[in-house]
Image (cartoon, rainbow, N blue to C red):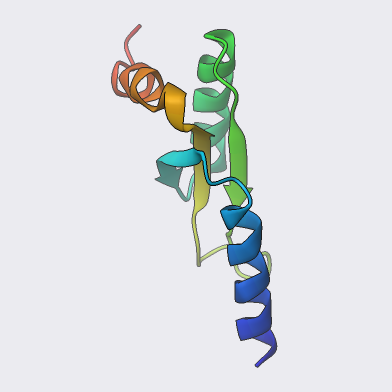
Length: 83
């Protein structure tokens, strides 16, 4: 029951940013930080939401979100890794 309450609380936090969209998800923390730096270098605000279980590090994902208006540019930057 406690887990359900925590999940609902997390969902409310995510809903507070309705104009944000997730552009990348992974289990590798270093990848999120690489993309975060790349997006911030291009003046795109970034939000990281880490849902990896702290006890086992085997469950969950890390989400990288940007404002809805920057989604297209962010996806282009993430998909063009060689630049």
